[in-house]
Image (cartoon, rainbow, N blue to C red; front, top):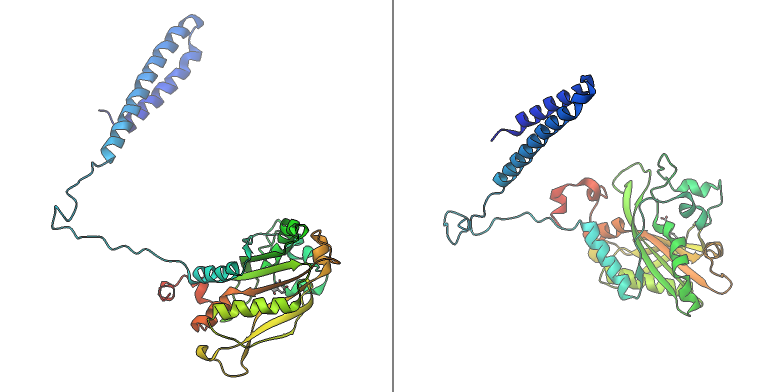
Amino acid sequence: MQNIESLKLELKKINSEAAKIRDLPVEERADFGKKINAKRQEILAKISEAEKALLDAAVEPLDITAWSGVNEALPDFYPTDMGSLHPLMSELDRVVDIYQMMGFDVVEARQLDDEFHMFDSLNFVKEHPARDGYDTFRTEEGFIPPAHTSTMQHRVLKAYRKKLEDGKAIAVVVPGRVFRNEDVDATHEHTFYQCEGVYVSETCSLGNMLGILREFFEKYYEQKLEIRTQPGYFPFTEPSLEFLIEKPKSLGGKKGDYLEMLGCGMIHPNVLKMAGINPEKYHGFAWGGGIDRLVMLRYGLDDVRHFESGNLKFLREF
Ligand code: DAH
C-alpha cells in the first residue's frame, strides 16, 4: 500500500493539472474534466483506505494474559495517586453542611460581576469613599471579579422574595471565591473564599442573627465559644457589626483573646427596597466572612498563602 504522504502529493499534482482546463478548447474540456475527476476519486479512495489501515493498526488487541493471575511477573495492582479535595473545598463543604442543617438554602456566587451588584445594589453611594475600601480588580470591559460575596445579595433577595408573600422566611447562604487587589502577605491573599448569609422575615431581629452565628461557630469548632460584637461600618447594613469569637484554648488561645470572624448587621432598608421588598414590613440580617481564616484557625496555620500555593507537601497534610 502506498503511504499517505505520497498519495497526498499525487492529489496535489492532479489538482494543479485540473487547473489547465482553462487553456483547453471548449470541446475538449468535458472529456478532460471527467478523466481528471476519475483520477482524483481513485486517489481519495486510496487515502481513506490507508488512513483506516493506520487506525486499525493503532488499536492494540486486548491481551487478557496481562493479568497477575496468569502472568506472575505482573504486580497485583498498580498504585495510583488519586489526589483529593483542596482543604478549602472540603472545609467549605463542612461550612455549607452546617448551614443546610440549620435550614438554609445554598446559592453559589459568581466569579465575575458588575458595578451594580458590587456597589449600587448594596447602597454604596456613587463617588463615596466606601467604594475605595474594596480594592477591586477590573477587566478592560469594566466587569469586576467580586471583592465579596455580598454581590449576590440583590439576586438572592429578588429570587426568593416570593417566599415572604407566602409567609415564609428567606434563608440563604452563598459561598464563593472573591478577589482583591491586595499586597499579599501571611494574612492577606488576592484570592480567597467567603460565605455570605442572608435572612429576611417579618419578625427577625439582631438577636436571631447572633444566635445563628454562635450556633454556626460552635458547630464548626465543635465546642462552646465566647462571642462578642463591636461596631462596624458597611453601607449595606444598619446597624453594622463585627462578630468576634474568643480564640479557643484548644487552638492556642488565651482568655480575652478575641478574633474578628466576619462582618454583619441588619440589612439596610435601601437594599431591601432595591430588590422589591418592602422594608416597612420585612426585616433582614446578613453576614459575610472569610473561609480561609476559619480554616487557618481550625488547623493552626500561620500563612494564608499556603492555600493558593499549589504546594503538594502542604496539600497532602490534609
Ligand atoms: N461583604 C463584607 C466584606 O467582605 C462583609 C459583610 C458585612 C457581609 C456585612 C455582609 C454584611 O453580608 O451584612 O467586607
